Image (cartoon, rainbow, N blue to C red; front, top):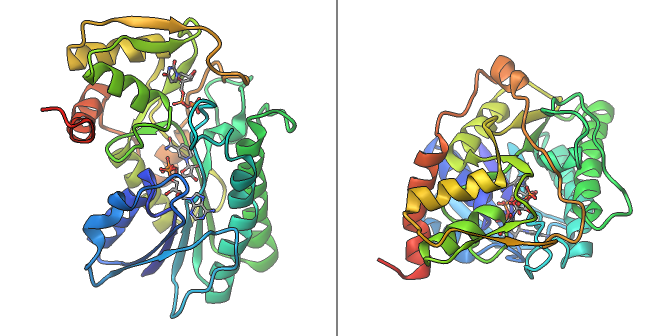
Length: 319
Ligand code: NAD
Ligand code: UDP
């Protein structure tokens, strides 16, 4: 296939480029670098099967030649209000990438009669009242809240994707991605793993927000990419959760990082670091992924952290 990947210079987009090129596909990457990094795809320059365009998906997208699939991953993704690349600080750009960007990408897919895959998120469930979250749960999101720029843009993106599927018969997929980590995450974007692993490798105390009782379920990037590729090759049109169901409190997560890295500096509790409502519990119900895609993650947290450490050390310039 000839595959267009938006957000190609980001964390997940760059791993998808690698994976799909390795499978023999041709990949067209597109990114405006608003939160991504050219370093993430530098190794692909010169690859005959890879081309790249610096472009904002919120503007009309023209691709020369046939396109067989469009994977729309372009969007700011960090909820940390203290990070310049967090969506709190890019509110309009985030809404435009999710709304106008999705419309433009669907337009490309329709023009080429191509398959379309939307990167949605567990954030569409908001601060969930149902636990764990199955795809049938419709969520708990405040449309006027500060997190809404991300959550509602993704919810709109899902609705628009389903509208193109139902009205035009477009061959669409929706993946609801739960917290994912690994090499090529932006060390400065303020998400839990980059913050905590960076602090651990620098021998600093880990900043746990609140009491650290809020839970997340962290998936290693290779597992996630495998799930996305399975979904792309499937015939499933309704949303599918992809993530690791191993739920843990953020305190437990921080303690695990200290243990794995041998950081003796412990934990520091930071009160009210998140101004908006921090979802209190998050765990994917992956029954559908198991049944439809025959997929489940198999890299545990210790192994995933160990695989991520060399990248962080290289970025931090420590041996
Ligand atoms: P990222 O910030 O590393 O990557 C996003 C990429 O999109 C960046 O390279 C950025 O420059 C690009 N981008 C943003 N707006 C753009 C625009 N208007 N035009 C062109 N490019 C634009 O984040 P990520 O973690 O790789 O997330 C990728 C996708 O996966 C996002 O859509 C995000 O919502 C979704 N997602 C990620 C996670 C996760 O845990 N990493 C969880 C749920 C959903
Ligand atoms: N968090 C934390 N310390 C940090 C960064 C994040 O305790 O230095 C917490 C944050 O409050 C949230 C969880 O870790 O409860 C996951 O945050 P992340 O930014 O990774 O994404 P989210 O799951 O909130 O979208």
